[in-house]
Image 1 (cartoon, rainbow, N blue to C red):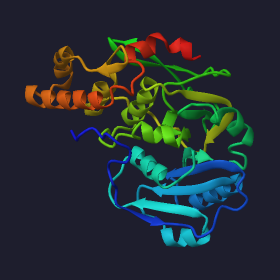
Image 2 (tube, rainbow, N blue to C red):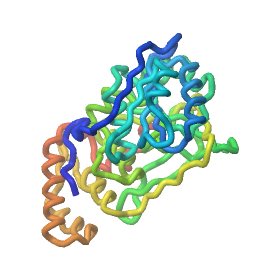
Image 3 (cartoon, one colour):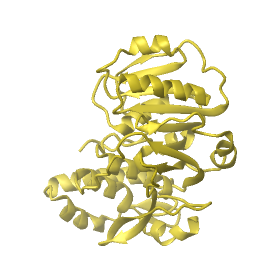
Length: 320
């Protein structure tokens, strides 16, 4: 297991960047957009970029996992207001978002995938004025399936088998909050994103990587809200979340479940090592190494915490 990152963008990923030479025409939203290309082919990508430009975002960043099946230079010539980025090494979804956040100066950034149907009015100015200006880490949209069925995207933390569990709900009100944004999709506060350290590249599971940053945001005093008026629809199959308990879940536990809040700081009690060793099944020496590393990380960040996981669950209703 690699060392827990201590700062934003600690992992420097080699990448190819082809920047547009022109600004986005007729920008009307003080909002950058990061388009994560994880499935759509070249023909669909053209349509998606055309629709994003019509929306009037202040800047558009298009990030691919691979340069296969299309030519970046050709697209850059056609869309000279878009910044295209292709990592030159394997990356996670979190890595792609971290890269995008480092390539923009906007205060707020919409993260979206190419599986979402891009409408001409994907984000209306009223959403920015009413919700984005509020002090929240991430604003999550309502999501619909390709059959226009509402998806359950409101997640509540609960205690399940003495550990963190997640309860799913599809009912959304004016002040609804959620534990994490489904499929990474939402409008992020970039400065808060960087303060939180961004996504942990050592957690390769999409589910646990997303949950790690989101829970850390809550533990550090931030909020993740659901907008009742911002709505998006999947154009293709809705992805399934794989919450299998593996080494990524163990890393999540050490960073978010093990810390205990006392007075004005957090720490990991040494007594929690034995519980962790049973969970890890990796042997005494490896478990001790990982546990010590996590204790050191929490000690570095101890004053960032505003609560621990137990307090978060007990006081969850106060956020509504």
